[in-house]
Length: 238
Image 1 (cartoon, one colour):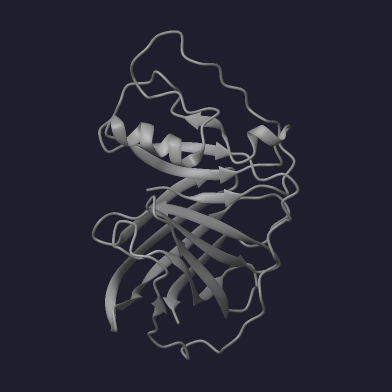
Image 2: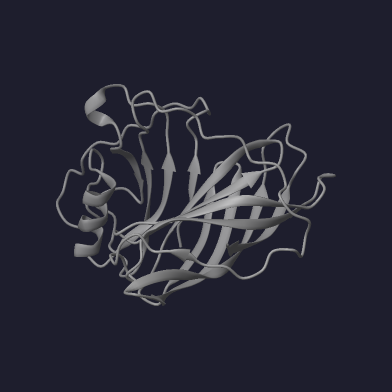
């Protein structure tokens, strides 16, 4: 599976990767848009295994472009395998909002659904859907239920925004398959994300459709000066 961390507020050196010296193997994705990179990987039987949103690009023409990949171009192709990507943010992009405060006590969130905006994507449903996630973390942080969002895109990307108590939220991205399943198990610098979700498109009358489903989330955190080392949660659509 794949995951994404929003690293726009972390100062980090920009990796530089040169094109491969020989043709064949994993395609060269540096300089591509996410959509272009995904198309190249699908053409060789691979997929996007995870994305990290980086700092602002050094020039406007690089906004939203891939600047790092793992495994590197030219590596042996593994059918069904994933390639982790690092992608520049947008010029002048604002940092992600702080996590919202708890909105309900644990156990008060029931099943819910949201309207599909289009009939595109693996399950014929795209859009941004508001839900809730009940988080239980160690390190002395009290459990709480927070507002969270799930964004499904036509290219199969499924983006879950997870509040992080006392810090900026994580943005975790996986790839949804045709059955509506998203499975993420990805190690990034300081954090390992695990997220398994199952979603589906259901008729809502008059030709409309809605999204239903839920998922389990887990994070293992190893960041200096952060007391929390593990969080678990249940995401549910409203």
